[in-house]
Image (tube, rainbow, N blue to C red; front, side, top):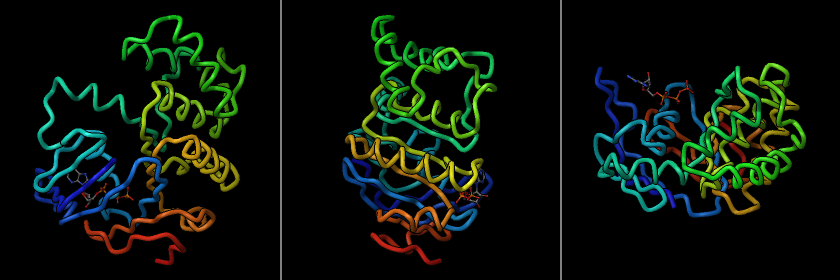
Length: 225
Ligand SMILES: Nc1ncnc2c1ncn2[C@@H]1O[C@H](COP(=O)(O)OP(=O)(O)OP(=O)(O)O)[C@@H](O)[C@H]1O
Protein backbone atom coordinates (compact mmCIF):
# COMPACT_ATOMS: atom_id res chain seq x y z
CA UNK A 1 0.00 0.00 0.00
CA UNK A 2 1.07 3.54 -0.75
CA UNK A 3 -0.06 6.31 1.59
CA UNK A 4 0.81 10.00 1.43
CA UNK A 5 -0.46 12.14 4.32
CA UNK A 6 -0.10 15.94 4.24
CA UNK A 7 3.11 15.64 2.25
CA UNK A 8 5.14 18.74 1.50
CA UNK A 9 8.33 18.97 -0.52
CA UNK A 10 10.36 22.14 -0.74
CA UNK A 11 13.53 21.80 -2.83
CA UNK A 12 16.81 23.34 -1.69
CA UNK A 13 16.26 26.34 -4.00
CA UNK A 14 12.97 27.14 -2.22
CA UNK A 15 10.58 25.66 -4.86
CA UNK A 16 7.49 24.36 -3.06
CA UNK A 17 6.87 21.37 -5.33
CA UNK A 18 4.29 19.67 -3.08
CA UNK A 19 2.04 21.58 -0.73
CA UNK A 20 0.02 19.14 1.36
CA UNK A 21 -0.66 16.01 -0.71
CA UNK A 22 -2.75 13.16 0.71
CA UNK A 23 -3.93 9.97 -1.00
CA UNK A 24 -3.86 6.22 -0.52
CA UNK A 25 -3.32 3.59 -3.19
CA UNK A 26 -4.36 0.11 -2.12
CA UNK A 27 -2.55 -3.05 -3.18
CA UNK A 28 -3.65 -4.15 -6.63
CA UNK A 29 -4.90 -0.74 -7.83
CA UNK A 30 -4.10 0.88 -11.21
CA UNK A 31 -3.82 4.65 -10.85
CA UNK A 32 -3.02 7.44 -13.29
CA UNK A 33 -1.30 10.50 -11.84
CA UNK A 34 -1.97 13.46 -14.12
CA UNK A 35 -1.49 17.20 -14.10
CA UNK A 36 0.17 20.10 -15.89
CA UNK A 37 3.91 20.40 -16.37
CA UNK A 38 5.60 21.37 -13.12
CA UNK A 39 2.62 20.36 -10.96
CA UNK A 40 4.68 17.89 -8.91
CA UNK A 41 4.04 14.48 -10.50
CA UNK A 42 7.68 13.43 -10.86
CA UNK A 43 8.36 14.62 -7.33
CA UNK A 44 5.66 12.23 -6.10
CA UNK A 45 7.26 9.35 -8.05
CA UNK A 46 10.65 10.23 -6.55
CA UNK A 47 9.13 10.19 -3.06
CA UNK A 48 7.89 6.65 -3.75
CA UNK A 49 11.32 5.45 -4.88
CA UNK A 50 13.17 7.17 -2.04
CA UNK A 51 15.04 9.51 -4.39
CA UNK A 52 13.45 12.51 -2.67
CA UNK A 53 12.71 12.85 1.07
CA UNK A 54 9.56 14.74 2.12
CA UNK A 55 10.01 18.08 3.88
CA UNK A 56 6.87 17.41 5.95
CA UNK A 57 4.14 14.79 6.20
CA UNK A 58 4.26 11.01 5.93
CA UNK A 59 4.99 8.74 2.97
CA UNK A 60 4.41 5.01 3.44
CA UNK A 61 5.43 2.63 0.67
CA UNK A 62 4.72 -1.09 1.05
CA UNK A 63 5.22 -0.94 4.82
CA UNK A 64 8.25 1.37 4.80
CA UNK A 65 8.07 4.89 6.22
CA UNK A 66 10.02 6.98 3.70
CA UNK A 67 10.69 9.83 6.12
CA UNK A 68 12.27 7.50 8.67
CA UNK A 69 13.79 4.80 6.49
CA UNK A 70 17.40 3.87 7.33
CA UNK A 71 20.07 3.49 4.66
CA UNK A 72 20.17 -0.21 5.51
CA UNK A 73 16.44 -0.60 4.74
CA UNK A 74 16.48 1.24 1.39
CA UNK A 75 17.54 -1.78 -0.75
CA UNK A 76 14.70 -3.83 0.78
CA UNK A 77 12.18 -1.06 0.09
CA UNK A 78 13.44 -0.68 -3.52
CA UNK A 79 12.90 -4.38 -4.14
CA UNK A 80 9.17 -3.84 -3.60
CA UNK A 81 9.04 -1.26 -6.42
CA UNK A 82 9.86 -1.52 -10.12
CA UNK A 83 10.47 1.79 -11.88
CA UNK A 84 9.94 2.64 -15.57
CA UNK A 85 11.11 5.88 -17.19
CA UNK A 86 10.27 7.77 -20.38
CA UNK A 87 13.79 7.25 -21.77
CA UNK A 88 13.91 3.48 -21.02
CA UNK A 89 17.39 3.70 -19.38
CA UNK A 90 18.69 0.41 -20.78
CA UNK A 91 22.42 -0.22 -20.87
CA UNK A 92 23.25 0.08 -24.61
CA UNK A 93 26.31 -2.19 -24.61
CA UNK A 94 24.48 -5.05 -22.92
CA UNK A 95 22.03 -7.53 -24.42
CA UNK A 96 18.43 -7.75 -23.28
CA UNK A 97 19.37 -10.79 -21.18
CA UNK A 98 22.28 -8.97 -19.53
CA UNK A 99 20.20 -5.84 -18.85
CA UNK A 100 17.74 -8.02 -16.97
CA UNK A 101 20.25 -10.30 -15.28
CA UNK A 102 22.13 -7.29 -13.92
CA UNK A 103 18.96 -6.17 -12.13
CA UNK A 104 18.53 -9.67 -10.71
CA UNK A 105 22.15 -10.04 -9.63
CA UNK A 106 21.92 -6.69 -7.84
CA UNK A 107 19.49 -8.31 -5.42
CA UNK A 108 21.42 -11.57 -5.10
CA UNK A 109 19.45 -13.86 -7.44
CA UNK A 110 21.11 -17.19 -8.27
CA UNK A 111 22.13 -18.05 -11.88
CA UNK A 112 19.40 -20.68 -11.88
CA UNK A 113 16.72 -18.11 -10.86
CA UNK A 114 18.05 -15.78 -13.57
CA UNK A 115 17.88 -18.46 -16.27
CA UNK A 116 14.28 -19.34 -15.47
CA UNK A 117 12.89 -15.90 -14.66
CA UNK A 118 14.16 -13.94 -17.70
CA UNK A 119 12.41 -16.02 -20.40
CA UNK A 120 9.23 -15.86 -18.29
CA UNK A 121 9.17 -12.04 -18.02
CA UNK A 122 10.19 -11.60 -21.66
CA UNK A 123 7.26 -13.74 -22.74
CA UNK A 124 4.99 -11.74 -20.42
CA UNK A 125 5.95 -8.47 -22.13
CA UNK A 126 5.71 -9.95 -25.63
CA UNK A 127 9.44 -10.29 -26.35
CA UNK A 128 9.87 -14.04 -26.30
CA UNK A 129 13.24 -15.12 -27.68
CA UNK A 130 14.76 -11.60 -27.77
CA UNK A 131 17.37 -12.32 -25.07
CA UNK A 132 20.39 -11.77 -27.33
CA UNK A 133 19.34 -8.48 -28.93
CA UNK A 134 21.03 -5.21 -28.06
CA UNK A 135 18.82 -2.20 -27.26
CA UNK A 136 19.70 -0.48 -30.56
CA UNK A 137 18.41 -3.54 -32.41
CA UNK A 138 14.93 -2.92 -30.97
CA UNK A 139 12.17 -0.40 -31.73
CA UNK A 140 11.24 2.22 -29.12
CA UNK A 141 8.18 0.23 -28.07
CA UNK A 142 10.27 -2.93 -27.74
CA UNK A 143 12.88 -1.09 -25.68
CA UNK A 144 10.16 0.08 -23.34
CA UNK A 145 8.96 -3.53 -23.04
CA UNK A 146 12.48 -4.54 -22.01
CA UNK A 147 12.42 -1.75 -19.42
CA UNK A 148 9.09 -3.07 -18.16
CA UNK A 149 10.54 -6.60 -18.04
CA UNK A 150 13.48 -5.23 -16.04
CA UNK A 151 11.09 -3.48 -13.64
CA UNK A 152 9.22 -6.80 -13.17
CA UNK A 153 12.13 -9.16 -13.01
CA UNK A 154 12.48 -9.10 -9.23
CA UNK A 155 8.74 -9.58 -8.78
CA UNK A 156 7.92 -6.24 -7.11
CA UNK A 157 4.48 -5.63 -5.61
CA UNK A 158 4.34 -2.18 -7.24
CA UNK A 159 5.31 -0.68 -10.59
CA UNK A 160 5.73 3.09 -10.91
CA UNK A 161 6.09 4.59 -14.37
CA UNK A 162 7.05 8.21 -15.08
CA UNK A 163 5.75 9.15 -18.56
CA UNK A 164 6.37 5.62 -19.91
CA UNK A 165 4.91 6.47 -23.32
CA UNK A 166 6.45 9.93 -23.70
CA UNK A 167 8.81 8.75 -26.47
CA UNK A 168 6.34 6.54 -28.34
CA UNK A 169 3.76 7.06 -31.07
CA UNK A 170 0.05 6.73 -30.16
CA UNK A 171 -0.31 3.08 -31.23
CA UNK A 172 2.80 1.97 -29.35
CA UNK A 173 1.67 4.04 -26.35
CA UNK A 174 -1.65 2.24 -26.26
CA UNK A 175 0.12 -1.14 -26.44
CA UNK A 176 2.42 -0.23 -23.55
CA UNK A 177 -0.48 0.98 -21.42
CA UNK A 178 -2.44 -2.20 -22.25
CA UNK A 179 0.59 -4.22 -21.15
CA UNK A 180 0.70 -2.33 -17.84
CA UNK A 181 -3.01 -3.03 -17.44
CA UNK A 182 -2.35 -6.75 -17.96
CA UNK A 183 0.48 -6.70 -15.43
CA UNK A 184 -1.93 -5.02 -13.00
CA UNK A 185 -4.50 -7.75 -13.65
CA UNK A 186 -1.87 -10.28 -12.56
CA UNK A 187 -1.80 -8.56 -9.14
CA UNK A 188 0.86 -5.81 -9.32
CA UNK A 189 -0.07 -2.30 -8.17
CA UNK A 190 0.57 0.14 -11.04
CA UNK A 191 1.04 3.91 -10.75
CA UNK A 192 1.48 5.77 -14.06
CA UNK A 193 2.38 9.42 -14.50
CA UNK A 194 1.26 10.79 -17.85
CA UNK A 195 -0.06 13.92 -19.42
CA UNK A 196 -1.58 12.08 -22.41
CA UNK A 197 -5.24 12.77 -21.77
CA UNK A 198 -6.58 10.63 -24.63
CA UNK A 199 -4.64 7.65 -23.36
CA UNK A 200 -5.95 8.10 -19.81
CA UNK A 201 -9.50 8.42 -21.07
CA UNK A 202 -9.17 5.22 -23.07
CA UNK A 203 -8.92 3.29 -19.79
CA UNK A 204 -11.55 3.37 -17.07
CA UNK A 205 -9.14 3.79 -14.18
CA UNK A 206 -8.70 5.91 -11.08
CA UNK A 207 -7.17 9.28 -11.92
CA UNK A 208 -5.45 11.46 -9.31
CA UNK A 209 -5.08 15.02 -10.62
CA UNK A 210 -2.23 17.15 -9.32
CA UNK A 211 -2.11 20.91 -9.73
CA UNK A 212 0.35 23.32 -8.13
CA UNK A 213 1.55 20.65 -5.71
CA UNK A 214 -1.93 19.74 -4.50
CA UNK A 215 -4.54 17.08 -5.30
CA UNK A 216 -7.38 18.70 -7.21
CA UNK A 217 -9.29 15.62 -8.28
CA UNK A 218 -9.36 11.91 -7.47
CA UNK A 219 -11.77 9.42 -8.98
CA UNK A 220 -12.61 6.99 -11.75
CA UNK A 221 -13.76 8.56 -14.97
CA UNK A 222 -12.90 10.97 -17.71
CA UNK A 223 -10.07 13.38 -17.21
CA UNK A 224 -11.03 16.72 -18.74
CA UNK A 225 -8.53 19.36 -17.65
N1 LIG B 1 15.71 19.01 -8.05
C1 LIG B 1 14.92 20.08 -8.07
N2 LIG B 1 15.35 21.25 -7.53
C2 LIG B 1 14.55 22.34 -7.53
N3 LIG B 1 13.30 22.39 -8.04
C3 LIG B 1 12.82 21.25 -8.59
C4 LIG B 1 13.60 20.06 -8.64
N4 LIG B 1 12.86 19.10 -9.26
C5 LIG B 1 11.69 19.68 -9.58
N5 LIG B 1 11.66 20.97 -9.18
C6 LIG B 1 10.54 21.92 -9.32
O1 LIG B 1 9.43 21.38 -8.59
C7 LIG B 1 8.21 21.61 -9.30
C8 LIG B 1 7.56 20.26 -9.59
O2 LIG B 1 8.37 19.54 -10.50
P1 LIG B 1 8.04 18.06 -11.00
O3 LIG B 1 9.18 17.60 -11.82
O4 LIG B 1 7.62 17.23 -9.85
O5 LIG B 1 6.75 18.35 -11.94
P2 LIG B 1 6.01 17.42 -13.01
O6 LIG B 1 4.55 17.56 -12.71
O7 LIG B 1 6.58 16.05 -13.00
O8 LIG B 1 6.37 18.16 -14.37
P3 LIG B 1 6.55 17.60 -15.88
O9 LIG B 1 5.19 17.14 -16.34
O10 LIG B 1 7.02 18.80 -16.64
O11 LIG B 1 7.57 16.50 -15.83
C9 LIG B 1 8.58 22.39 -10.54
O12 LIG B 1 8.38 23.76 -10.25
C10 LIG B 1 10.05 22.09 -10.74
O13 LIG B 1 10.71 23.17 -11.37
